[in-house]
Amino acid sequence: MSLMEYKMNQHGQFLTGREEGRSAYKEMLKKAKDLEEYSELILSFEEVKMMNPSFCDSSIGNLLLDIKTGDLSDKNIEIAFSQIESATVDSTLQTVADCIGFPDVKIIA
Image 1 (spheres, rainbow, N blue to C red):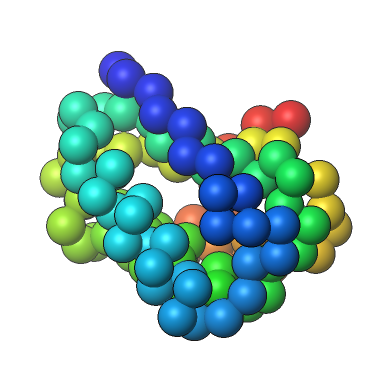
Image 2: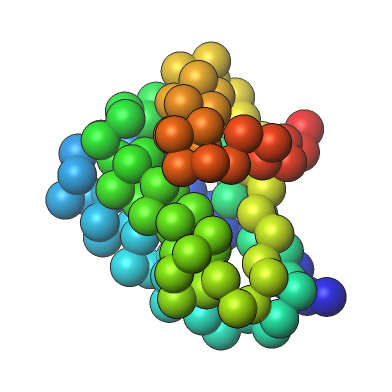
């Protein structure tokens, strides 16, 4: 099993908007497609101060859908969130993950 960490702060400290979310999604999807089967993808939120639902849904929500039923479903990728430093980021992630059907996403301190 391989491991890849994707740093969300490369998109800024304040992650907002659907267009920006779609751009982040395209980058994450490209990286995830390069993963071996049964890999773990860790999304790091170090230094991310805020993320709104539009960004989260357009980026992480779409990635979760791809892992669950889309282009990545045959790879059996596990996803985890790490270094969440903001309560708003945490609640937004949990809301989107619950809506997609990932209520027990692994959180790494």
